[in-house]
Image (tube, rainbow, N blue to C red):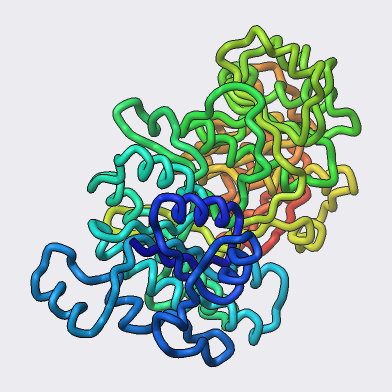
Length: 506
């Protein structure tokens, strides 16, 4: 039996090679892998001894030869195939171990296109695809994690059809992911963000217990290594937990320089506050909707200490996510069986694109960006202006509205979300829902700020805001009735600003 080993990542490959030799395999290898294995005292044949051709073109051509691919691809139970390889003196290759040039890693460390090009593997994917195609007769190892189970299967003679089929599936997943990343990198590098054929590749992080509902299956996948720094300190995350976590983390990440707390339920914000003191921010985050906060996801834009943990422990949050949690704080939740506790890094890169699944395909767009500048550079269209404190509140309201389902109205005062109306089919209903709920809870909205993620089509929302003593409003503008809206704001002595930037979220 023969095994061909040619790997970029040499982790534990010597252990695998020694095992194969001990189990009767002759090893064929190439370039750096050949040298590495020989330095480890493992006898190997140079691939050039098989092909009768030297490696050439700076290593671009090594294994692309009938003596290699014929030995992999011929059907062991097909007499014509057997006669052909005998006629041409081709010997069987029964196991192939290949992992690919580090294209992705190279793009992370350099922008040198020539170096990047040289890290596009040609022979490796060809070997993997050939071996996977003939998986019944050739074991294909395309990932370091497969070494141990393959050695175990060979030892126990359990490398049967089903086992080999699993290796085949993983092999094609790996080559598809590899090619997909190359295609995506090239199209993005040359500014073709919406190519004719869009490749999407992601790596599974975990299975979820089920999907949105118990009869659905679910799993979390990541782009690049986005979730590698996520630490699950307690509990098992569900599909819905992760979806809500995403909304909560997006909010606090938009206030990365401030201590803040965001509470999310069913994908929408139901509490938020910023403060110099994180415990104060938490206390204020409950003002908007304590009832909805129960069983929700809370994201703390700071490290959780014991004192804050004791306060958090008084209410049931299904998920607590933060930038860190000390051991004493974690111990506070030891007796809470249902709570899940997660930590993430503070600086999370945002996706450049946004996907939305629809029946038969998906929609793709540039990710929405929300900046401080769109508020602080907004156009004052009313006679009344907002002072620094009101502008800061408008900025908070604008971000929350942008990150909450449309139609959305956010009401903020002194760094605290007082009321929110979201997911409404009418903007005036969103305004009414938010402000009426605030009054029901005896929340004083006098001097507060309101943000709408899209323009007000009529002046009725301004009139309603006036009844609740709102001091300032920010919105994109752009309605054919903007003049009426502005005139109403002046009549009601409300500061009104236009950002000229809509933030629909459907």
